[in-house]
Image (cartoon, rainbow, N blue to C red):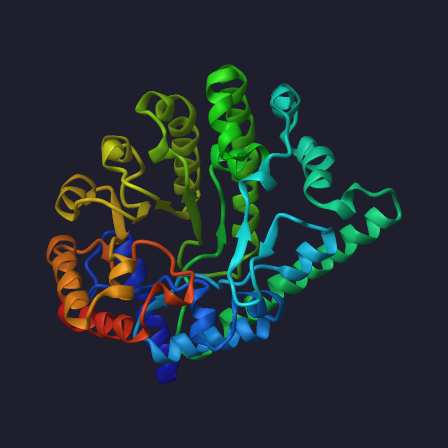
Length: 389
């Protein structure tokens, strides 16, 4: 085995041992550098969305320049697909800005359509949601059929290009963590069908229909996740899905228990039973829900956290899940190297003992000003030296 492949395998083993709550040789470092990476590579977000070669070059530059064990995922979006289907939801404020998505663009489902949605979510998506979101799919045949075929072709090309990027990174010794992404049904409804304002209004105006819709949508979300699992190349390690969680910390505990937790627990238990690792991004402060999280499948559950007391989190969750993140991205932006390293030491002192902690930022880096490259490099080098077991 070549030196590069040895490095690749060592990094994979280090990360997956930690995910299983085993103690590796040291704390792994996960590169959660999203569209920030485009700017680091000398491009804009727009350029990498339209040219996957530029996305690949930016990711290879990060893998070469920044000490880490794994990148979390390619950051580009399929601009050609959105164009082919006539999407108006995604736009740029300027050529150099990151892509924007407005809540108004999500308000495409009427509040009296919940019963129809719950009866057959897949049919509703195809016949109602897609034509409303994508102008070309609202046209009559053959224009609609041509747009759909073009969009499908562009999406297939996008998937192949992402696979090629992962292959190029592997040839450089750098693995990529996520094989796909799913959303909780409630987040999906709020993000893409009703808008956040609409969804919160529906909790009060149509509570029974809202709950029924989430329950009906859950099996389809699981199918979409398993579809991505089956499309990913074979691997000796479990496949890994990202699950961003947007709304829970905005909910009262009673509403969380009624609308969010049952489906979330069902999703997590299903994938754990099928040896698929789901890593939720626990956006906001989840300390109110630590007791809930203790009910998830032990050692088959992970969590990328944005906020929380490291000591409390380690105490309550160390036997259940691998903990990821918590390093404040704002410190990488505004802090000195010394301040960044001091914070990294604090996190490792509290979270690293016994294993089960992967170092990473508290959120994905997006804008070019989200972090200074020299701070990232200094912190990651420190973690690799200080985090040895």
